[in-house]
Image (cartoon, rainbow, N blue to C red):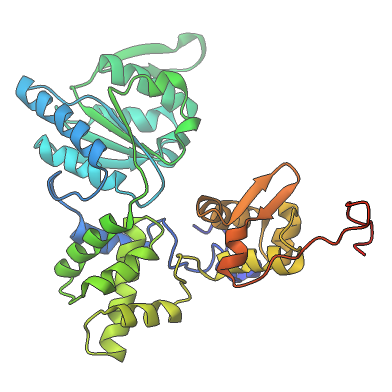
Length: 364
C-alpha cells in the first residue's frame, strides 16, 4: 500500500519495494480481489487445508444451527492470504445469514462502529478485518456489543452528555488479524472460538492449484502444479497469482498446457526461484553474503546496501527469509545461515586463525 506519490519514492521502486508489485506478496491487490471472488470455495467441504480449523469450526456452526441461535464470535489469526476472509464468508453461508465486511483501520471513531452495529440484521455476520488496528474508543464499545448486544450512544458534550442505551439484534462477529499479539486480552476473551491459520503444505497447495486451474479453464499437469506449489511460500493467494502468470506464459510461449518445464520457465521470467524467493529476497541475501561475509550486520546497514528503506527489509523481506531458515536475527545483527550460502551457490568464508587459535585483529 502506498501513501505517497510513487514518483516521490524512487527508493521504494527498486528491488521489489512496496511501490513495485511483488509477485510473491501475500497481500491482495485489485486483480487478486477480483479473481478470488470467483475462486473462493462456498462451503467448508470445498475449503482446502486447515483441517483442524475446519473440523472445529464445523462443530461450532452445526451446534449453533441445531440450537437455532447465532454462532459464537470467531477470531481468525494468521498471515495474509491463508483464507481468513474466505472462512468468514463460509461462516455466513453455513449460517444462511448475510455478511457485512469492514476493517479496523476504517473504524476510527466509536460513532463509526455504532452506525454499523445499529444497522445489523438479526443473525448477520460482521467481518472485521485487521481488527487489531481499530481505534481504542471503538474497541471499548465493541466489548459491550459482543457480550450484551448493546451499545451506549453518547448524546451531547461535557456535563450535559447523556448515554442512551441501544439494543442490538444478536449477530456474529468474525475478527481477522495478522498480529494476534496486539489484541488486548479483554477483546480476545470475548471471542467464543479462536483459530490460528497455518501455512499450507505443498501437497495442499497442489490441490488448491488444480481446483483453481479447473475454475479458470486452464489445463495443468500434476508436475506443473507441483512446481508452482513449491514456489508459493505456503500461501494459497500466492499460488493462485503464480498460476495466472504461468497460464499467461503457457498461452503465449507454448500450447497452453502447464507442465513442469513451462512452469519453471515462466517463473524464471518473473524472477521467482525454486524456494519462492524473488528479486528483493535475493538482493538482501546477496548483500549479506557478498558484502558482509554472512554477518552479523545491522539492519540499517543491510537496508542501505540493498538501496531500500529499513522498514521494507524488516517487514517485507525478512519474515519469509527467517521462516525459510535462510537468515537469523541475533542481538548483534542479521546473520546468514548455511542454507543461505547453499541456496545462492556460494561457499562460506573460513575465518583465518593465528597460532593461538584466535582470529587475528586484521584477519591475517
